Image (cartoon, rainbow, N blue to C red; front, side, top):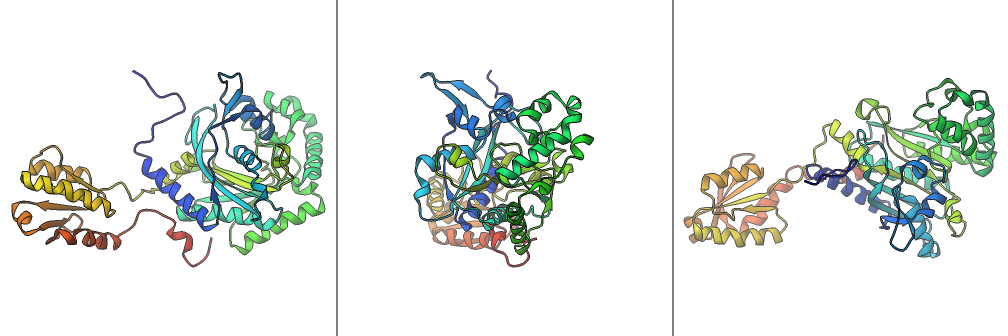
Length: 439
């Protein structure tokens, strides 16, 4: 008997959650004019080595690498940005006069990580990327898209935006030198990975799950104290735009993010540890102004974020979110063979009209059909017998109110839709456009 691979899972009962989250992501992206982009599940390994960083934990420990039949080194994508940047360069999207060039993706990623709460080896991610300008307003707009997405899922009061800046190349180098000097007396007390990071990229020590709470790391110098004047002004403008949008944030001096390509603004969305444990970030991102050029494209500033859907859905469940979909609108119950033939065709007509309809195809008894309608949690039951068949009518029972009425079959679609429209709809982005505070 075959079983799923460790770190993977079958999406069955959670499918409505994924649909609700993906629908909100697509709708928010539409409102902000991010165009959908779909990139391959695997790329040349070198793409991730050059973009994410050869010595990052993702590349050195977590990627799924293999050699294909042509002898090429291939990697299943561990994150979305590198593939989008490759597509941006290869398809010459930088020639598009519409700047910034804005794209979003919903896709599967792979990391050979230790499975834990809300974290799997195969996982799904929603991300956006914005290319072509260094404007602080674009950082704020991208963050506003993320905030609106969380607001659509009624999560805005359950998470906190942590934000920081690394500055440009010069500021980042100055800070790395200051951090090395601070950590030098403590190198021997650090874990083996952080001793290696001390030489390769000391900023990643601040992200370490083992040494992150040590006194040496807690007392590390702040990035803000090593910024060039222009970099400081840039960050202040980002925060000013967030203030104007009434988006709350916390300036987190220890936040650096773990990927080599980040410059300037970096951020994470964190929920209460009670919802997700100590590793409580459900997404994050930042600016990567040098990555397009690093991968062979023209100098192109860019920014973006990624949000893990599994971790997000785990939080939604903890908060009692239930997707209002998956229920059958109407169960057509037939009494007699002629009625059964009619319910078969009537179900098809109503489905074409947009209703979710079930009917009996197994010749069940009336009692068994009623039981099936309960299993399907049907909002309405339509009963068709000899009398109704002869008159062209149907008996409709509202399961919520237990009200029954007889109406013409031709009126059935309109009647059910009218009643459904008066009830709660499936989760969507209706909250995105509500008036009032963004907080």
